[in-house]
Length: 192
Image (cartoon, rainbow, N blue to C red; front, top):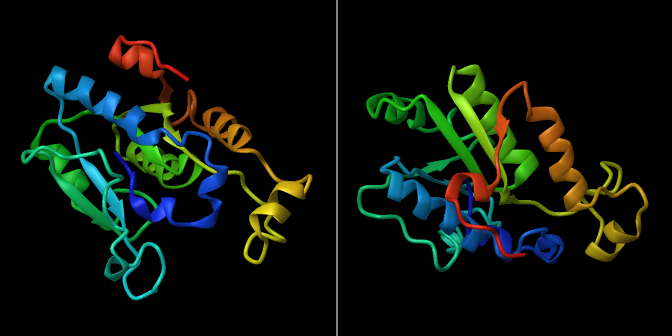
């Protein structure tokens, strides 16, 4: 479970998120994994010393309210986009004999996709659950840093969150991951 944290909800672009109910979607996936006896690993992104939403001193580097790891479930913090490079995730998975990873969390095309790619390169069978990821509309690179939410939405070059998620699936499917739905993994239909 990657970066399902309050840091995103305090940023202005959260209003552009495709799955504002991401905590419920992730919780559904987690409950099914626990029922199967699978290892659940929580990963949080941190940017110490930046003063922003991901700087731990500001109190937002914590799971979204409503999500609670069990005492047996590791919570790792990372400073890279993928969940492997700056953590002991690979060692943890090896210790538990894990050969398949299921990826979900925030942002679909960023930390989730990057983790899926690295996991595939490391030899894991990767399942990517796009329905249990969230992302926001993506501004064109020429305006990304200085644009307001209104300017992002008005720019015809902006990709909607749905387009970003779809393109992520196109890139991952059959190359780095198998795309699966929440229904397939939980046996319970998703309510939208």
